[in-house]
Image (cartoon, rainbow, N blue to C red; front, side):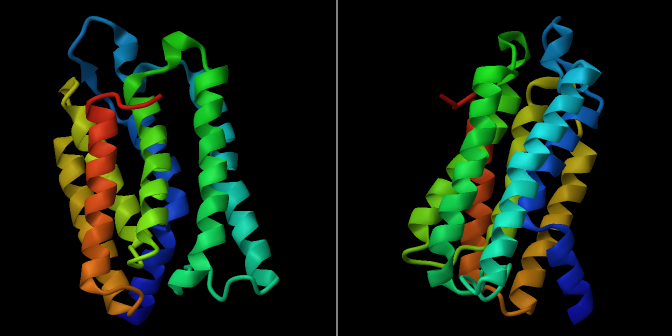
Amino acid sequence: MKYFFHAVSFVFHPLLMPMLGLFILFESPTLPNSLITLDALYYFPDQAKTVLYIVLGILTFLAPGLSLLIMYWNKMITSLNLKERKERFYPFILVMFYYALAYGYLKLRLPEYLQHPALMGFIFGIVLVFIVSFFLNFYIKLSMHAAGIFGLCGMLLAYDQSQIESNLPFLLYLICIGGIVAGSRIYLGAHTLKETLAGMAVGFFVLFLTVKFSLFI
């Protein structure tokens, strides 16, 4: 079981969640409530999808991942999972910087007609999750694994409410996966139940609110 839960923690690492969320938004067939086709991210132009996959993949996964590896090799952190609360300060700042760049790219470089509220709210919400987690880290070692996977649940629930044909069955599967991910962090001793529940709450409610009410700057 230990190896299984280690694998779960690796596959659903927080840095992979933005790209998984982007894949869900772009590749899940839905029908919008409006008569505007592009209100469903599934119908975005393929070229735009490809560019976003590449740019956001670099800024939300590759760049922060390599930066954490460099910090690990230079013994600035003792684990890539940032098990020690005190070690999270600089990695959090670094990741927030990259994710803010990702949002800035969407805001400044993406044509306005492609700045879908759910897409913008999703990326901005991720930045906000890290900001909230950064300040909470002074008091509690919040589970970023739980925040990541349940953030996707909150995002998908909010997005589905703007679509006639939604992904409710997939959302239920995602919640089940989230439970396994959260349980794995507790089983491995990486987080307490309190820290895991805090991560679940922050991720879910921040992403739900930013996507549901288009809360972005």
